[in-house]
Image (cartoon, rainbow, N blue to C red; front, side):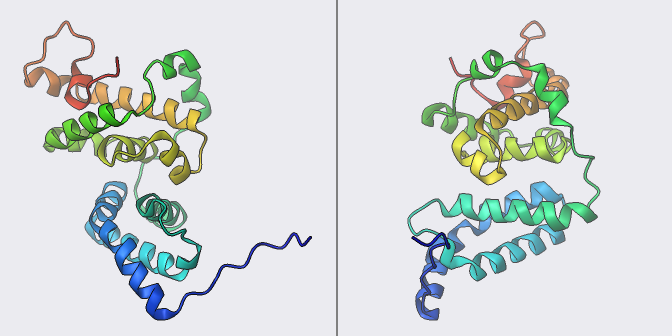
Length: 215
């Protein structure tokens, strides 16, 4: 039995164009939003989206019809950003996760729970309702790797499993990275939380701006 990879069936140009338009183009707006929050620059975001769609069209035969087109495109965009745009951007230096993830053991991280459909929907809506200047500024000030997990989970509603595929990391790393990212964001939002009328004695004031914690 041959160990060579299975050949991908070729599509006719008409079929390829039809499926590409129907399955991938509806993701344009969230894809641009993701690109902008990674690059923090409109021109770079547009270039990154264009490059993503060019690559997606080139390798469209490898996309399995009926699977998550949004996750597939986000993964291509993320890889393009890392390989090209991040090199010439002024993003903060990459964080050493081997140090950061040691802060939290498995029990601490698992206590947050997985991304259930109800809590995820509530969290996603809560964040979207509160993306004002202060929240957007705090989010944009995070190191890009932490910013990315907040975007994927709290703004775009990806599950941990989908995020792991987009980012090419284990689910456990997704959980610990997201946990740490939210703590960073909470610290940055403490003053904003007080200005919004949250009590000084509640240690989860900034969390309340972003999410309803899992019970």
